[in-house]
Image (tube, rainbow, N blue to C red; front, side, top):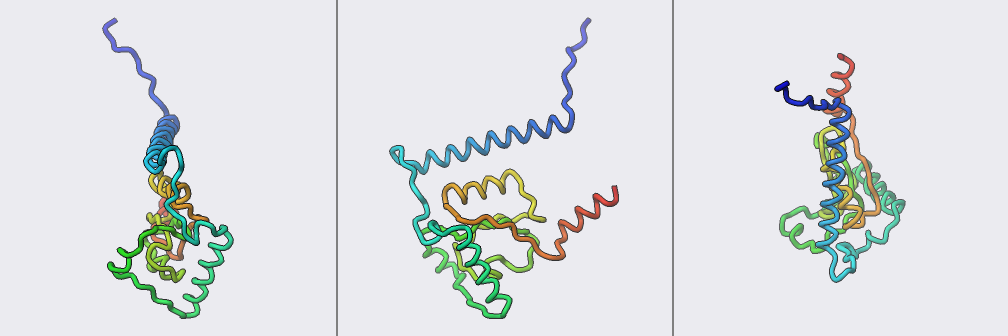
Length: 170
């Protein structure tokens, strides 16, 4: 008849599911590649052999909460955030991986009184977990062996307020 064959048009849900599956597959492939690079002669090597690698999630949370309590009480333990000090840290062994808002007015290192290298931060407006953020958190758990994952929000978040406003106006 001269007409091209009809193509199946996927619904928005089917398209989103397909994209999500491709994203998951590529994330898994990337993690496998990283694991392969970090494996030497069949043995998994650890990038983190320091004190936090052996901490329980409860111990890590207690440590963060203790630092936050000192911060709230005004007891600043100012850490050295200079480039020289940061460059001198050989082992990246964070106590926690934190999904935090990019809009936060105070850095997590300050509110928990932690120094350079102590926190593995993933920051995005509104604490929205994307495939990239998830892959970063997976990396922190699998290879940096962080004992704790934490989602850190804040009051008056512009990203969340805007998202809620848009949904309410629909």
